Image (tube, rainbow, N blue to C red):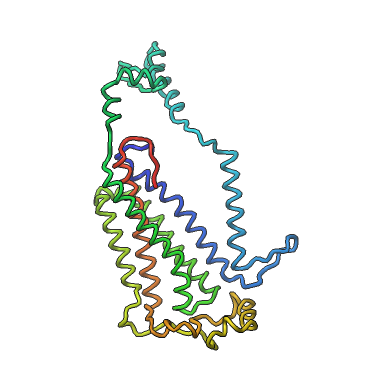
Length: 329
């Protein structure tokens, strides 16, 4: 990453900020299209219906096409930093009446208060700096620290995977949400989380929070907050409410009755009977948390923990690797 160690937190916060804006827009689109009931609005020319299932995908398709256009026509993927630095250095040298431009191209040091380093001929530069090159070849980093960072990143990825795969069906069964309610409340919850994904990187960029608390302590704090969210949303035995069963649900009716299947599909997103099917025996013995407590804990814990852990973990990983070409993971 082309940044100094002092500005590493701002650079990584910027890379974390931009994807969060996309997440916020995506969740808002999902929440906004949740009221488009099935079958939805028909587009006459292409015979496609816009509803809560198709509208987000169609909007996303246009966004992807626009991104592809920008990449093809307005981004070449080349690194132009050295070219710009050469122009800037040449202008400085001309203003200070420095005549020997050939020395500038070879990367020599210029006196008169101007110092220029443009490694166009890297082989000659290495020959003149054998001691530095020898030290660079013997450079090594702490593999244990790298493995700890990778393991922590693995834990974060597993937490995100659980959030994306388990939470929607859990919420639908526990709180008896139909498809429209699931998309609406899920979109609002995701938008609240995405807002914090923007808030925390912005705070790191503006206020420099890493100066108040170290990266290692920030990662530990984020993991503690994430564990706290899991504890608050757990199905503890002392809770009073259990998972509700769906209305008019009979044993194995959903699997054996084709008429009911057709009715449920036709009513998808409008009128349905959400809840546990009666053959889910575990629903009668599994407790559920309060809906307000569950959503609040989910938003605060994930919205705070994920950006803090990701940013500080990337900063630590970058510092461990040292001053070399690298990318965040």
